[in-house]
View 1 (cartoon, rainbow, N blue to C red):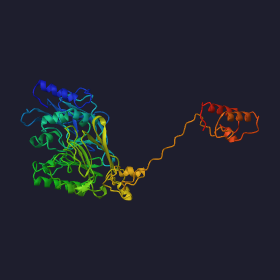
View 2 (view 1 turned 180 degrees about the horizontal axis):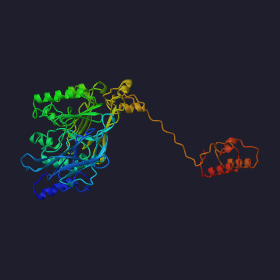
View 3 (view 1 turned 90 degrees about the vertical axis):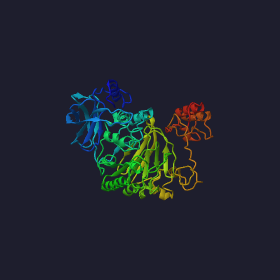
View 4 (view 1 turned 135 degrees about the vertical axis):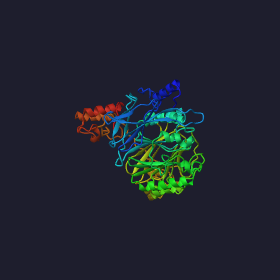
Length: 539
């Protein structure tokens, strides 16, 4: 974003109008508007709405559950971007409105106004407040390593996101490439995702590329995040918050590399993390950050997570989400560096770094359950107090992987057998294929095979008998009136004679009553004649 002349300004306004919509068709925004409004820190009773403009003026958000009827003023600040090599320092006005005394679990429509101009009239903007911990269901968008020039990969994944509904979004770092500048953040994040972030709150974590410019200052200036870190220096670099039944923790793994922080900073974050996790009473705990603790790709590990992993394992967090590696990878549950069942404290680690910036190579390790070299995002859903699931979604909404975690009856290796069932069958709960025969334990048990014996193939399924259809479903006898073993014209003649009482009886009267009417008559003879002529089938 730049205020450097009429041509540049026109370009910016057109970009704000077109980007973020899959079709480019959207209501006209006010000419004063630069950065489209986005919601931040949505709680049960409050929300923050932010936007930027070219010119100053009194600014308001109008909102309401049944249309924008309540008005709240915004604070406005004249902002000049710090000087950055090879970039100019544009200036603009930042408007921040705090909406309070909202009703939990309620959808609010809103519009924004600056200097008497309604900037988003007709856009149908809305957000929903957090329903609180009693809401057992929650849908979370998770992605990372995304902002790469608004290229087709980033936009394709963005479009797939827009086909789904979410309550909030998490980002696992490297929000924009390649240097995390103000301009890159404007072009490759706020413009690209504007439709989404105008409706749901966005909670990022810091990545190495976000740190490149001014120690992540553009990131800190652009986002309004919870300020519950222990010091001013660490404020918004890591934080925690509650939404629905989940306690979320975003960490800064850059200080673990040794190049972005020192031992004192690591100790400070570790102590804060331990206290934070000990104090939550939420039903679920999700922790996310940029650099994964366990690599499944060809990206070298240049950080030390051992200062924080014991804390996360001691707290028995439910899942750990990371980025940095441009793949999708999911591990077996891990504790103290080795696979361990969920019931004994194993934690599944998920790497989701496929938001649009290139792709790395998969290099699966002994703890890797799956690794895919695909652009993607996660649609993570809390189903109830026991279960969470997520879809890994690629281009055109293709589901690349589906995972379910059941805390109450876990299946640690996702092979179709719960850990309790694995004990019954004496299989390995951390090995999908205990006997190494190429079939999962769950598939073998379902097929009636022995999952512990590689020489025990699945039994050959018994063919389902096929019945020849007959147009006359009531036929229950053969028509073989003389019990000769065949149905022929002689049977028809005998039946006809019997019906005319020309003979006292037939040899097999039950067979002669082919339509099971209780009498032997000309209808039976006609049916047999049709059968002899091949016009129908007798059962």
